Amino acid sequence: MNESNNERVVTRFAPSPTGFMHVGGVRTALFAWLFARKNGGKFILRIEDTDKKREVEGSIDHIIKSLKWVGLDWDEGPDVGGPNGPYIQSQRSESHLKYAQILIDKALAYAYPSPDEELEAFRKKAEIEKRPFLYRDHRPENPPVWDGTKPLRFKVPEIKTYEWFDLVRGNLSAGPEALDDFVLIKSDGYPTYNFAHIVDDLDMGVTHIFRTDEFISSTPKYLSLYEALEIQRPHIAILPPIMGDDKKKKLGKRDGAKDALDYKAEGYLPEALVNFLAFIGWNPGDEREIFTLAELVDAFSIDHIHKSGGIFNVEKLDWVNKEHIKRLNQAEQFILVQQFMPESVTNLDNYNLNILED
Ligand code: GLU
Image (cartoon, rainbow, N blue to C red; front, side, top):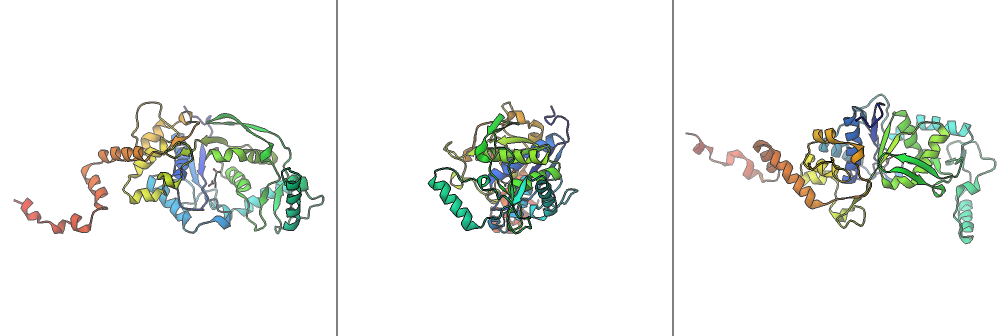
């Protein structure tokens, strides 16, 4: 079944370069990639780097290396280009400004003039009166013309509960608590993720977004922007969280989850890692457990993504890795093992091979 209702599927992985590529990120990329490949669609890599304070040097490179190592490829992206570039969010300001202007023209965005001290006073007052501080309670009556030096805020048109259909979880809703006049473009000139990803997904023709559940509470913000811009939103598929072995909290480094390339250094096979990650929150609907990437594409379906969290179990990873190693032929096994052996062992010159000759 084509779960895309016959539209050309376009998915994306849109990491922020705020650290190295954690296995959780690989799992998100994998599901978006599998869905695109299964449906003959496109998979885009976009780097969301507009939070300059949090950017970590070297992370774009690490993200690209990690994705390549596990065998994912992309049809458009910062390194391969494509018709909808640039694929680095901070370089897309022309488009962000175009949509910001549309909102300004509709009186749905305004420059926020209040200096920090004034805001602080508003905040203190709200605290004393035991009510939440809301920017929308302090909209300027005559906002100055936006010249880029002040934050541009979205004037949320309606405070309401949003209901939407999620491809994995079904009907979801989130309420007014998420809706305040949030920033579209910061005073440093960069757009916020909340705004930029809406514009970029639109420009890139993204049809399906795969992301984890921490984005559910912000979804009313996104929905209010789609409405204000009068654009059709992509389908959303919320992936289940990855839980640590204790099944209680989300996966962290203490649970043995590392950066993707650490697994490479430790001798895990990339096919084993993706096979293992695919099963965190998905199953093929039958008893099979060992899959190549191509077999995963074949078996993948959103219908079999779970709603509740999947466990990151290192023992299971080791077992999956062992099964994949067993599938290698002898030469492949030798190459794998070779990298962990001292050169004195693997250098054939160190052996008297004459004895093998007649
Ligand atoms: N840049 C966001 C992140 O890395 C992308 C989230 C999304 O829209 O899927 O969390």
